[in-house]
Length: 465
Image 1 (spheres, helix red, strand yellow):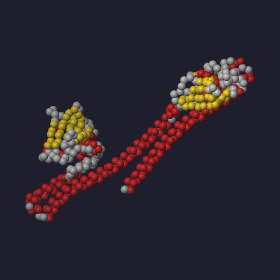
Image 2: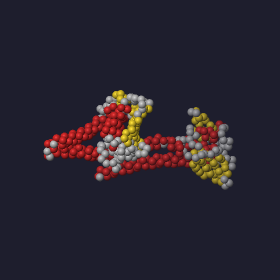
Image 3: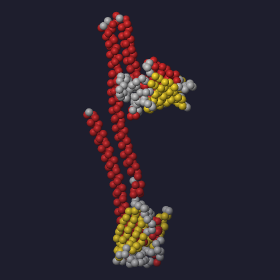
Image 4: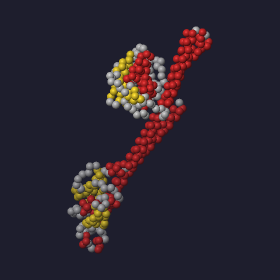
């Protein structure tokens, strides 16, 4: 009980720590994503403020129509120089000092487009739209903001007239707005920018994928650990059941042999020849049962070791099945066995001794795990390079939840109303082990009308495993 509480406490703490780590990672990634969005919004707002200030200074200088902007745009790895207005060479020495140079790498396309505008400034307000846009894009370039689509709309109040508007629409926009003053009128610049969420997710894909991979590995490791612990617990329970079964099985032959021995020693049974023969035969039979039990347990230990090998030879599965069925009829006279074999003789390469024992275990179970008279049907078929051995019984059947466990070592299905069914839970485990070593497979399915069908697939030719 104490170990169980300790295990529950430790597993709960590990689960809590795992959940906390995943949650913190998710919070950190979400926070980083939001910070990048905020940085982008801050950069756009800063660029708008710089553009407003530059445009205002340029306009207030009184050289609106003659102010010169020189910009260098990188196109196809080549630097091209654009001037605005084109006749800046006619400027005087005083005016040349106001020439502004701008370099564009990311927003070169936008700068080139602005140089092609027809109107350098608005005739009503004196607002220099080209200057405003160039400074805005140049500021983004200097802040290393990846290229995004922007759409500008500049309106004046009162009247809400549109002074400038970029064509087209943006599918997933985020909006910014900044007030502008020009010639005593109130101007408003509204900017729509393409939401950079896809770009941010792409940039963070390495972090997201690596963090998710680590989280998945940790979760799978935790699940594997828990499953391993529970499996060990199940194995421990099966070991206890096995010990109980062995103890129970040993008691009967030991008690019988001891009673027969006491009868010979204490009650002068040896004077009666018939009684002495009967008691000695009883002792011999019980000692034979004990020997078989020990042999089975020792065989399982040997078969599980790496040194265990099978010795394939040519054998006829039809003869093996006939011998096993005849032996079962002698052992259980009331049993009904139907045999269905093909007319042609089938030969395979297999270890006849172990294959016989593997099939015998299934036939014995079919005879034991039944409430009435056993009715067994044995079918042999050849399918190309494989053979199929089908053993159908009229027993109580195997629950779906137990189908995968019946081949586990020491595992036994509760027999319900069927009593005194002896065994250690190693028969089907042994059968499955032998069939797999022959390169085959064994499965179980429900039979029509009750019972089960065990299907054994074996290759006609095999390579020793």
